[in-house]
Length: 308
Image (cartoon, rainbow, N blue to C red; front, side, top):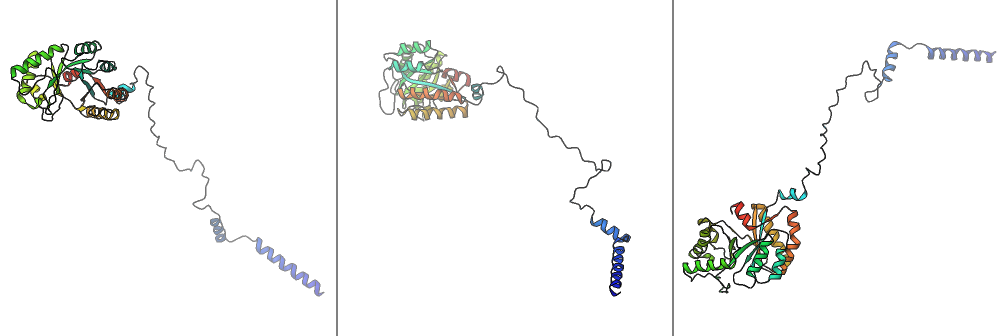
């Protein structure tokens, strides 16, 4: 009996527990549970197309128009492009007429250059004719008195000479190099600084009317260029000596210095001599200088076009 009573009591308790668990929840508890299971702000929420917020249209990134290919007929060549930023360089080879085989190698260089030929030396006329036939420039390398007392050679002009004697000497020297388009001084560190002497020398060029004067500037006090301007003779002055030292590396460095002046000022004049080391430096450096935009020109053209 007692056992049966306990079983009845357990069954009644279990039924009460079941009813309590299965009963409907009050409204406030239903709302709370719904909020607990609603998506959080960082959770993905599926939104129907009808209610999705409008997304601003993306701003297109500007794409450059395709650059048309440059054809061979319009594409600038590297040398033409480089030349636009380069300058003009006039090379003068002084002391010519003495070492004709070496001088011929300078004439053979495939660039414009000018040979300045001494009067009364063994090959004055021969090298001048050969150079002119090859399209090179020709000048008279006029011997003039030096401060050192060194003898500049036959046909020299000195400060002790009268004006008449100077005029006669210059005319005789020009007759030795009849193809000359202009004149520059050989030595002359003393005579070129004397206004009287230079007025007499350049007066001959002015009288002829078709010759220019290049001041070799063997003396910083030279009045050659200024006198030529005063007399209306086309003129310019040397910027760089290429071979004060008979050394290839030195001459190459001097060519680079001349090129730098040409780029900065539009033109430059460099003077060298018929030395094997100078020739070697030129052969090595000409392609490099041309590739960098340097244009080699005759000094006569430089003076005529630039009014230097």
